[in-house]
Amino acid sequence: MEKETLEVGMHLVLDGRSSDPEIIGDVDRIRKFLDEFPKYMGMTKVTPPYVFRYQGATPEESGISGIVIIAESHISIHTFPARRYVSVDIFSCKPFDVDEAVQGLVEYFRLVEFRRQVFDRGVEYPRDLFSSIPLVLEERLEMLGKMAHT
Image (cartoon, rainbow, N blue to C red):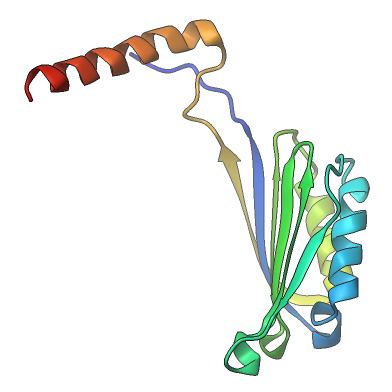
């Protein structure tokens, strides 16, 4: 049986190298980014940003991590200033302009190199409750069959 599916959302994953390690090493700037970027993208912030500095065994292992929960899902960031590395995830159940998001990230973090990937999330889930009935029944029958053999 073929499943009818509808994506749950878009997930942008961006890895980049910043020309300015001070920007990606500044907790206040990371917090400001997480506070303002949802509005820039037309998304709805649900929580304030949570931002933490992590002190690793070496400067290369140290960095900042943060997340903001949005009504559409979340935006998270991890930075490693000594390596000039920044990683940003934007997961939204509403479609968004990926090019606009990437451009905003490139400008804000002064990225000189980056790699972006976009994933459709939730493609394995049924469109509606009615479509899920055969799937649930199939799973239950499979479970009953396994129980009968034990």
